[in-house]
Length: 239
Image 1 (cartoon, rainbow, N blue to C red):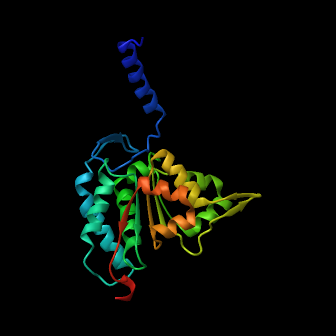
Image 2 (cartoon, rainbow, N blue to C red; image 1 turned 90 degrees about the vertical axis):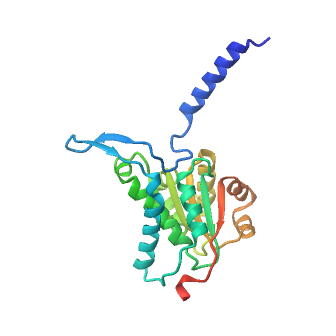
Image 3 (spheres, rainbow, N blue to C red; image 1 turned 180 degrees about the vertical axis):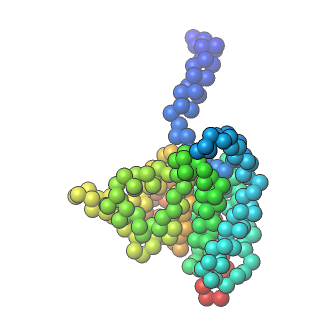
């Protein structure tokens, strides 16, 4: 018969064992944890809380991107904005997000604003290589895999990865790398699914088109780990 005390001891040890093997970037979200360290001159620095400032910084980044691109100003989609804030800060939300909708509705602007918000709030950790916050267009993945394998491996394991325009016509679906065929998007989604890493993508594709393009396996994994967020409205570029 099993000794209940020994069983509990084993289960406690198993929990510790699994934690030690877990990717420390898994389920990463913006937190209020204080970071104590010293600058290059040895002066003590304390990183202040961050979560409370996310909505203001995200809104500012979004508006700044609109101004820089000389797009017509319009009221921000409050529903999508709220979802983005919660996604970045709530550890109970899914690890990934897919912003989908027709061209020009602001998907890329929302995604870049999130990427820039993480970059600003964690600029010190990024400079110390404690976290990696990467942005790339899906159409650039094939060339990166073929020409810079180390860079590609670093990208696909980044703490936070933002991929723009999933399913773009010019996207390299298959890369012939010394006779070996590789599919960058499938490889990245699979890798990040296994490790529960924060991933944000944009696409003009529908769910059915994603399934047809990347296959049932990848689509199923995306349905499990991605929050599917529709971004509606008129084309920003044509207003």
